[in-house]
Each structure stands twice: as C-alpha cells, then as structure tokens.
Image 1 (cartoon, rainbow, N blue to C red):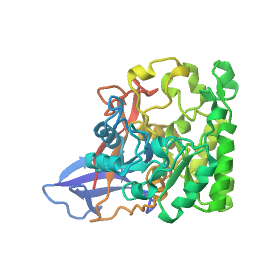
Image 2: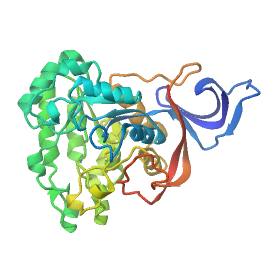
Image 3: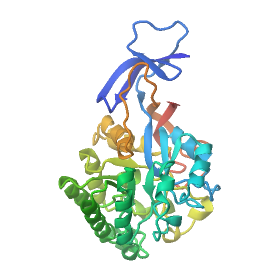
Length: 410
C-alpha cells in the first residue's frame, strides 16, 4: 500500500536533516523523497505540521509482568510504548521473579519481539551475589540491576568479569544509607513542604566511587538516573579525563523540579527524587551539550491503590511512555531551548549507541522504524486514551499537546 505524506517535516538525527518534503511510503518503507511520480492508487495525506522521524528507543523502564500483571503486562507495555513513539523498549530486571536466569529471558522474548531485557547483575537484584552472567549474556541487551549496588568490591568484580563480554553495563549511583527516609531533594522546598530531604551527596558520593572503579578497571559503563547539578559536574569531569562512560537522566527530571512537589501528588514521588530548580537547569544544559547522552523514560507503573496514599508513603515511580515525547517537545523544543534534532538524538541515536547499536539514516528502500507525530494534537490523559494499565502520572485527567499518529515497525 502506497501512502504519500505531503509536506511533512522530516527529522533524521543521523543525517542531521530537518526539512519539509513529500515522502512516498510503501508498506511503511520509504520509496522516495519529493517523488516526481506517485502511483495512482496511493493514499495522499496532508501532513503539514506533522513530524516523520525514526522510532524512539527507551533505554530502561519497568515491566509489571512477570509478577505484577495488575500494574502492567508485556502486551500493555508494548502498546503504551508504540503509542508514545517508542518502537524499541528495554526493561529492567526487577520483575518477580527477577530476570536473573536465561529461562525468564526466553519467556519474555516469546511474548514480545519489540521488548528486550536487561539481565540482572546479581541474584534477585539484591546486590549480594553475581548471577551466571555468561549464561544470561546471549539473550539480554546488557546487564543492570536497576538498583544501587553498595558493595564496591562486588562492583569491581562485576566490571572485571564483564569486560571481555563487551555487553552494556548500567549502574545507578545512589547510597541508601544517605537517602534514608528522604522523599524529596534536600533544599529550601524540602523545608517548606515539611518533607524529609535526600542530600545531594546521596548521589555524588557513590557516583564518585563508581567513576573511580570504572576509570581504574577500564570497562565501559552507563550511569543511570543522573539527577543533580553536582552529578552533571562529576560526569562532565570524568568524560573530559577519558573515562569510558555514558550517562542518562529521566524525562521527568528535565521537566519538573521540587517546586512541583507542593501539590503533594504521589505520582511525583520518584527515586531519585525530583531535583531543585538548579538541578533541572543543569540537566537540561547537559543533555544539550551531550554530557548527558540519553533521556530515559524509566516508566514505572503502579496500581491506583498502591499510589493513592500520602506522598511520603507512596512507592517511587511514574508512568511515561505515552507522555515523554509530547511533553518534552512542548516544554523544550517549542520553547526554543533545544532543537527538534537535539531531542530526537537523545531519544533514538544515543540510546542505540549506548546499547552498542547503530541507527541508519532514513533512506529510500531501507526498512527502518518510523513514527508520524503531530505536535499540535490535543488529547486528555485518561483511561480512555492511555494504553498503559496504570495511571500514576501527574498529568492524569489533564489535556496535553502532541500525539503519535502512526508507527511503522520492522
């Protein structure tokens, strides 16, 4: 089936292209740009103001299945991802049971071809004992617990053991002892709102230690969930020294700060917590500069009952696969802080690079995942529109601009 997308805005972050053109597709494959001849049977769509671009890649998110299917199934997770423009999804191993055995990986892969798994670094993601990493390696995208590993001797052994495998490794710098019972980033707002604070050093101290390990051993690693200005400084300095790292932050840490916590919305209870306004500004600049390579969604579904409690008692996390692209576009591209290509690189090209993969430029007769996005379509974030089974988001029942109209996946 031929479709002619007329006057669509073509974004290609690999070829550094941002232009308006006509694009002829056949069964989702680009056949030509500005075609001189169009098949008579082709469907013609007026796409002025729409964006045609590569499918997005989410570096890490959480699945409910196996173990918590009431929060999210693999089917609903994939549907939410596609609805948000994410044609590739990588889930963390903190399911029940944890993804620490090859049989569990195989079970997940049979249910979804578009979802890949991070294999657990430690049994049960408990941070105590290494998994059978060699057995897991064949079926997983890389290794991560998705949780902090406080035992630095174990981190050192993991980095040494995994070096010859050349698989991505993702680590989270967070000190549970320093975090304590904190639920908001320490600062003026934590005092104003009467909530226990999490000090910056709960991130910076373990991050410094991880950087020392990585620099000494030389195994490349990805640093997850950077959330503070100090964390950005440490990553920037380490990269300048040639330490083999990449880094990510989450979409919510780019959009919101502790100012938003005055609503006491349990959906804003995150881990790491939202930063102070200066943290948010530093993260936005770091993504623009490439110091922070990737924006991760870190989609974390919970049931209504689990999240409908006091802010300090709520489990940490929020959904985001269907919201990240439209809200990042509205707040950071339309405001002029980033270019559209900046956003797309951090959501597609750089995640692929962190996984040791390459994206190709959009070219005629080359199948590639594509999405058609309308930045101006208004929709309401409610159960009738969300594909996710969970609704733990601060934008629930609100209207937002920007929606993915179609995805072509290969």
